[in-house]
Length: 213
Image (cartoon, rainbow, N blue to C red):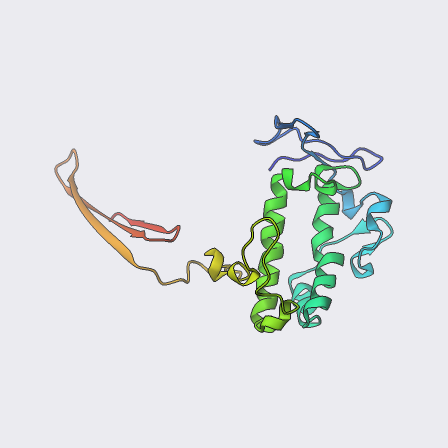
């Protein structure tokens, strides 16, 4: 992803390494980051952030158990939304962007880290949905309302299944059963011996298993 450290005033700088180092946007220029040294961010960035995860201008990321506790302590939609907006969501934006980096600006979606971060935010939402958000009323009872711009009902996109997404738990590896096709090929090596390779191609999943005895 590339990266750069902030200067002594915690100002973000253009990233100088990685595949995005030469990227330039016509309006905001380079992708800039101000990774906090020892968790430091610009002082004004901490305004409104949950006090459990910052002290002065230092922030920290919640641990896995802390994230689960935050989910369990916010079972209704409104409290869950507020929890996300003042804890888990802004922390990554601030730590990566500080006061002036791409992740802290209107252009945050231009930083590739944005996609990774928001995939994680969606994973947390999926965990909350699984435990507490199964009822239509969990999302303020507007499942049938159309989303602006896209003009599709919330119910058509407000689930992992509707978006063909599955989030794996830590340590899990491809737990989804899937139909597959198996192809066996036999080849003769330069020494005249046969070698058999079996390839299982999983349809609809990004899974390929290859064995070659």
